[in-house]
Image 1: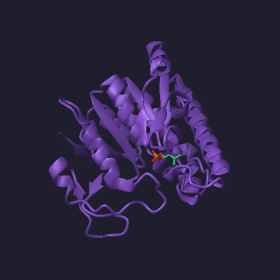
Image 2 (image 1 turned 45 degrees about the vertical axis):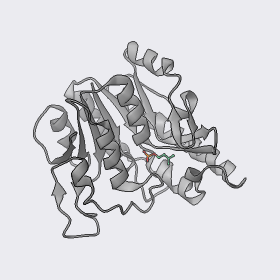
Image 3 (image 1 turned 120 degrees about the horizontal axis):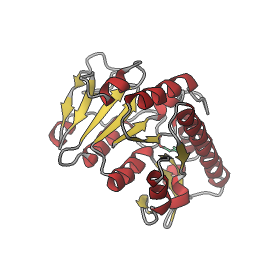
Image 4 (image 1 turned 90 degrees about the horizontal axis):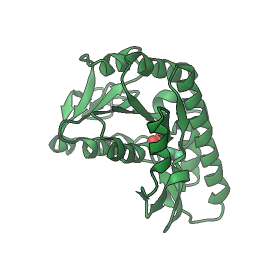
Length: 256
Ligand code: IP8
């Protein structure tokens, strides 16, 4: 099984509140279907989550009553994106069900307590892809918080032990600096824990869950014996399909 995260940057326009990129999401789901590989998809929240979550500091937990309606709205919006994604998967021949992380998990001081996995497992057992996503989740100590799609990737990797983990983003891979602002940035085809030390910790401006470096750390945590983690550019048509078919493509591979 290949575990795939479709990042918010490829399924939404991150600069506009709640703007679904239907065409690109649809193409990526088609590439997943065409690969014929067993897969599980997790997705980010993009502009359905980060815009309001950042404005009301939802990731800091409950500090002020003014955050409460915003937390409810962010959860609502994240579920709306979940529905759009499962409809897109279903339209492309992949039976899928959206599973809001807050309906199966709570958090304890920012960390997911994965104690009831029965519903997710049951879906997969009958051949329905359980699709989880970044969302607002209740937290025993902080009231509420944000669980990122990357945290959900770790939960799903523990549960399903995928042979490969793929992050689909809008960049060709990991760079030595931010390629959008630094013309000297170079693509790193492969990295391990040692290489990570040279990477800038600058985070994406509107990303409450922390930008590229956090994502790379999450990738390394998910590498295992015989399992690599790949970051690939989903804005290039056909690249995800080629990667899933085992072809050599431009990307960054994390290994243990
Ligand atoms: O897009 C963040 O998840 P991510 C979730 O995977 C929210 O970082 C609601 C901001």
